[in-house]
Length: 582
Image 1 (cartoon, rainbow, N blue to C red):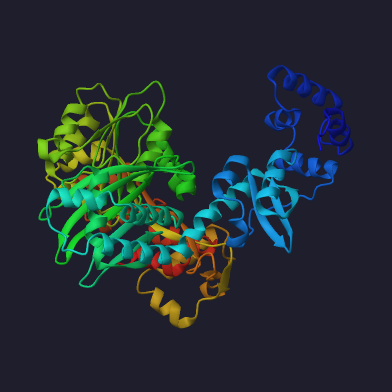
Image 2: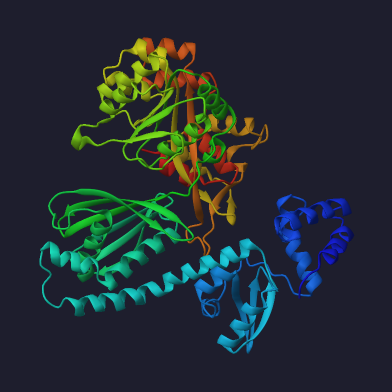
């Protein structure tokens, strides 16, 4: 079943994919580096991996299959155990009678085919596939967790009952013993695996009178995941405390900790918050992917003039850029994206954060610790003695931090930070309310970004048109004439087209996405501090007056940006209103 290089060369040249010289150069390189010539051709960018695999399948007379969007029967999938499938890139995907079709990357691996034939007593039919297909199929081993989860919980909690028929005492030694028992370890591990598989950002474990409710926050929305028997609660709490290195015998005070979850597929840092409630201790686990790369500003959802305003202000060596919005609106992610752009060998970037959400190379990140007096203000004061060029302050929440940030911007630093306000213009009265001098705000503030996160519609979605009743309801929350004008500017509405003739999109529930949404994107308003805005700040103008002036100068509000994304089919109007309407 081996393909000779000259065989491959003839077919590639015949298909017009490479020239004879290109192939010979790659063959020479492959022989020097002890690689396969096909791998070198792919590495050089002359052909794609899929083209190579399809050609190999054709030469060998082996059918090619693409499993990227294929849902495999769990019973068939488990014929080859997950460790073997993962180690040898081989997937069982279809069974008809005694015939088992297996997808693999290397059909020359005859030993593996023979091993599976002997262990299953089935006739093995090899098929060539892509690495992405294998990756998709391997994920499905984890998806079978969901189906098995209910049974597993019943079985394990039954074991817990037998392990502790007597009353659970509050002594530390007993709690340690419970935390190390196999059933509890399995339940906590499976909860984490399942949440990661579902793309959850948080896990809420909430004790109630007779049971324990587990909820996942997915795409910003909390959803019930499962109910566990009350008897499992002390063990789950103890296990999570052990993992986070917290006090096992402390049940009256809140505790915060952290631990890591690592497998071949993912690496997560888990932030733990434990709070005493009426029925026990409530746990919230924040799941932070360590392997996640920073998003670009475009991927976050910034576009057009707003994107240009942010990029031009990031080029300024001094001043202050603020990102505003409520908790969970993605402010920290935006700051990290900006730091990624600014992060180069010529600058020293230092941060003071609470907590450090993601580790970033070449950036000096400091964690706030109020118990020992390391507050935002104290940390910022120390950072100024560290010769920084760029400073990121996780949040400005008091007069001391605000005045230190403004002074840092005045003394030749670029300061990035966040503020809790509802709009970009609202950041200025908020700073004045923190006793900051208006003339200092005017001279240091470069730009304010306000944002919210909306859920993205899946590829399958329904087109609809707004009715008169819906337009009347919408008019309470936004200026429909202005929105129509913006849509015309974007080419999403024709010159004489009315709003009820413009197609918008609704979610279409599917088996994969029951609510029709998957993932999130930002909607933004970016307020650059121009000469006229500076004059208004010095005069202590209201947020509404500043916003009106900014709109005259071309600023798009979050509602307008949301409607543009709704008309483009990225999100829905309902989502925009859900996050904007206070």
